[in-house]
Length: 75
Image 1: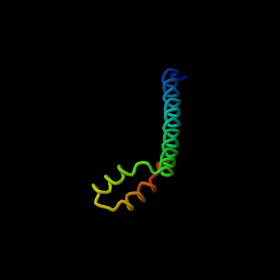
Image 2: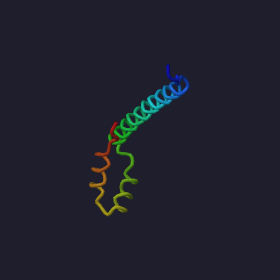
Image 3: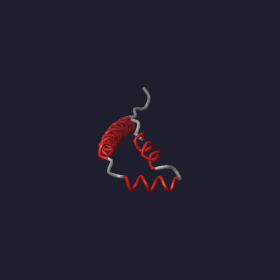
Image 4: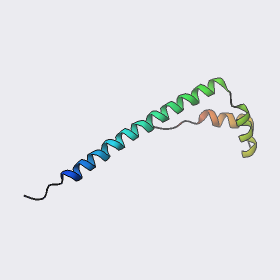
């Protein structure tokens, strides 16, 4: 019989479980952030920030609003 690696298998399992929990947490965070972006799009509350960003990027306010509406996190 060869060596048994119980401790290393336990460590590997713990890391696998941790990474799974963290990835689910990140996904839930991205879903929530997309919901917040949808809500803000309906309310149109950040006009000053969008106007400033448009000025800095050298584009029109309408173009900046369209870019902002089109942004979503992928998960």
